[in-house]
Length: 502
Ligand code: HEM
Image (cartoon, protein in one colour):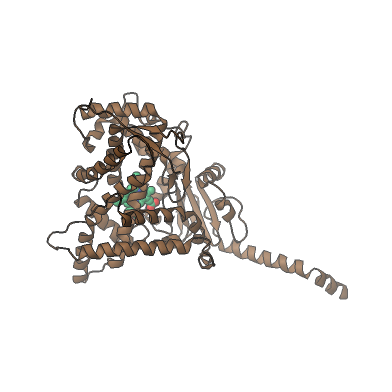
């Protein structure tokens, strides 16, 4: 007996550590509900180290090759499902779409996005706000020919500004962002801002900063306690302070705008929202619309409608700088279609298959939302042989479609001709998913297509895009956050001699 007691006391520490580790491991295994096959997970932290390592596009590519189109992961108590490949993405987000149309209850959605309006909401709030947005956009003709004049109004100052660079190397990031966000501002509250407006510049810088720190704050989605650690290591305070700053600016603008509202003549998005909300409240009908939702809604439109279109355009310009031959072919098609006119219209697009192929290829290779936005389940859902548990965070791996070597020969090459058949007609345009698909498909895609066509064709019509003399060709890789963004770069916009000026 004495011998046994002495043995136990000698190894008490080892025993204690082993027992605690085992209990923690067992508890974490019990809590972790892995929704599909995946790699081995560490106790407690699960696949945290795997997800923190390097480029997730590469990681998901490897995991797909090993485990298939559904890969199950976990971090802490959060189960994660990565969905890859065209067929599986369609199965999950279109056929089973209504089971996968929620947003997860995590820091970036609930605290940064406040779970409000349309981008970060779920259930009744999302349904009512998404329906309102679609109705408003359709009634206002946004994305259609009638809206073209609003886009052209932003194009003119942009072209002027590019002309003023006189072919010197120039980073077009800020002026493109200003032009596309001005379109959203005119939709939201009928106002546009000068490219030098300081308050507007501040707003765009804040959006940029929050996009940049999104990688760090994403960890808090899995370990909520990290938000409360001292030192703001995970940039949660910075992110939330930025949201508060944006809301203070927008709140002033919205209040000023509503004070001039004339119910008989609604001017824009805000006016329509306020009138519908007042009507519903007056009629005592159930509604989730209120001032707080409106504030977030306007912010949602600004972020969702600026960063995406601007980043896509920036990638397209980079690809064109790398491919002088593509620029030339596109320019010839533009000149032929213009046939002496000064400005193209969206109606010309169907006569311009090469330009359309350039845009499609730019969207495919630019792949600006490689993982779309996170989705979630709120009940167990059967997908093929697996049951995806309730509360799973679901990642649509759009990169698996856009850069799939099985679908696209040499997928990393910029080759617009892959979207054209032997007769020069556009093909395979439905095989890319830049705007996602299913119930959460981007509601701004009509506007985005209008912007991409008019901005890109106007820039190529007026300028030859050349690399910077000091830095050479812009880099073809970028930074992966919520969106995939080019590294800072400079381009020379050398004015073409237009007909009549020769
Ligand atoms: C090239 C430009 C654009 C691209 C590539 C793009 C792409 C996307 C993607 C991938 C989603 C996420 C779908 C999901 O998984 O939930 C999305 C959502 C959204 N987009 Fe766009 N978008 C673009 C332009 C715009 C514009 C101009 C607007 C402005 C009206 C807009 C408004 C929205 C909104 C409000 C959502 C949230 C929809 C919801 O949650 O129901 N987008 N977009």
